[in-house]
Image (cartoon, rainbow, N blue to C red):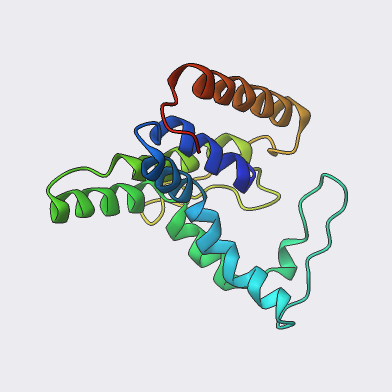
Length: 166
């Protein structure tokens, strides 16, 4: 799924308490991709890396992406790592940080929306290399329902549930 959708899903699912909760949930929703791809995109901007070529809706050539991106992606897209960090934070703060669940939701959405062609989700890493060959998130069967559902949820949220204007 695209990074903007991850943030919006995280915000509406776990950030409905107040404005701080919304933005924290949105941040945790985008964090896995931001940590994995952010340094690479900064490197492209600074001229350290070649920009991967996009061919319409097809994913870019993975050979043009440095291996460190995949290594970080394994960490940030693992339900095992997510659960460990979530419970460590819970132990340290002596309370769960529910906004962090947007990170877990990100991983769950990525499992069926990433194919073997480009960054399949290593949700059981480091215990297993098992991955699912999903349908690319840019496919109309995923993209359009995602946009429609987000629109419906945000209209409902702002119309009926939101006490604080963002």
